[in-house]
Image (cartoon, rainbow, N blue to C red; front, side):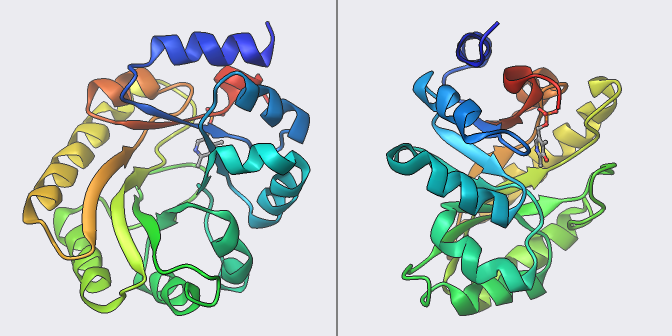
Length: 224
Ligand SMILES: *Cc1c(COP(=O)(O)O)cnc(C)c1O
């Protein structure tokens, strides 16, 4: 099956109000271009340098999609990342938030939307805030109160990429509860829109538990 067909089949399986962020790591620009032609609206990149190359190779097509950083951001890559990405999904500590905030204007932007990354026990990265309401709220309040170039627009969780997705259900449920509680607080510079959880193996469970943004790679592009 072509990437186009797989994207369209995946899109049909997922409710319209759930955003699909296509995880493009290790894919060629041709593969990503095919997905964009098939209707993909949002592209996720793990590495800033790969994103930069992808962006250049895609030319015009790069401008019709939203770019999400879904891998961890190192301080020395912030200046390169800011002009490319529309949203940074991986803010998991105040240090990186501060580093981003300092550089937003230099990148010609007023504000950059970010999601707070919560660590729910992933094998890929141990990065992120612990999945406790207090810790997550603490970080969000600190960002909200101090960094005027960041807008917190959601939460993101990695979770295990393999194994039984049912094992993540409780974490997804808990993350959704925290998302709702923080949303109700209506904090300045915080607008909780996106709950980014679920990948190829787990998106069904994640959506059942309230995810409205899934990050999908292998289900559309095939195994790496
Ligand atoms: C690779 C990756 C995904 C997608 O994983 P698949 O199993 O290929 O769907 C989602 N999120 C992040 C952060 C990733 O690195």
